[in-house]
Length: 531
Image (cartoon, rainbow, N blue to C red; front, side):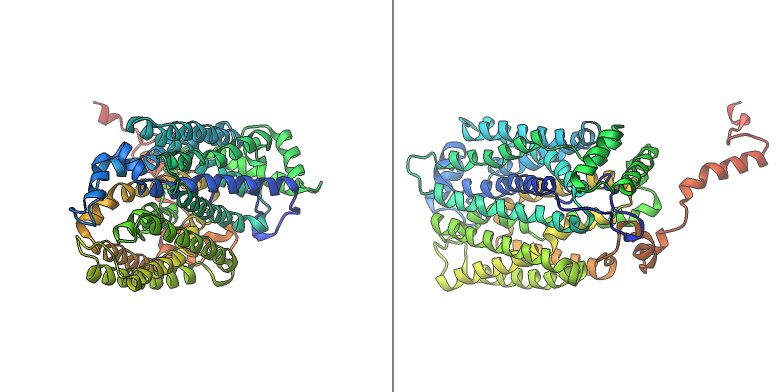
């Protein structure tokens, strides 16, 4: 996920500080990969294991019987609140953990927060892989969710602060790329473990999540904390030494002074969340919250979580459904690479608007095919139609992967001003996890009741978000963060109305004092009101 926080290493006027791509920066890239892989693997693996008969028979026997009887509606055989809770509990726990992670990243630093995330993941993986009952399974998922909350707060902050300015944007999208690689890896693992005889394949699928968690934990033990974090916590000399090490040059004084100044300004903001609600910060807050809600209402997580279940519902069969999700996972990875290449050339708005058209049309076509060819009790989908559905899903995923996937995180991270960036990041993560939970918990029930209409539902949202981008989202391509207010917000037809030189809330105390003096009182205190 894209980062925010005390990332003030970019200088004013967009001039780059001297910096080399040093070994420690490369190590940080590897850490980002493990953080992204960790999150992506858990997104991908949950849908695969919920399509495995042995897993369903052990933990969700009611669902297992539905899948075996062929008596119930194709669309409703996986409709079970417990099964949905298995997937969505991770995101609810992540949402809660984010509040604590915001505190630990500020007080303990980014490195220790990543270490905490890795430990949560390792314990959660052990409980899931060795689960004997549903309670043990859900507790394991909750601990994994705590790991998600801590990792998604700390890793992007760590990346954005340790990276040289010229590669910071690429590293943010690189994190998203590794999320998609994690999903693909999970799909490949599920495809292999589904063939294991003896009923323990699902344990291996869940247990292999420990690999990226272990890599992140070990990495967090050996890397140094960011200069921003060290300076923020008063360790000025240590911060200066780390800055010299990661930049690979002795000419670090300008950047060091910028970080010290950024730290001073950040400390002056006593209530960052309250500051976030001030009039001049509302456009960035509206954009960030809307992008997170819209990102989930594209329907992407619904498809990625439950792709094996979805394909099985369409009559592909368990093996073929997992094979199909491997294909979609590969499309996800390749398309995210397209975003890394094109985001600073074509711009954010072009990618989002083009993807909106592509996602809308693919979902409408899917709805038509499923509406005509998949009835409640049909046993299979003709191969030509099945291939068409897979192609449409791939078309949808590719559009998402070069637009709403990475840009839903990148844009909020580059639009908040420094004094509200940390609070803005927390709100962004919380809103995203909240709506991820809502969609994960509701999708299978929606599939049961709306049937093929589920795709019409999401296509309607795609249409709404495309109009939002067209009229309300300004272009931020190649504009330094420090110049966003002057060059973006003050020039937008709507948001410029919020960009006054001062806020009414800021001058209200002074106005009260003036009024009080006129009335013969001080500081707005009215003695008569106390009689």
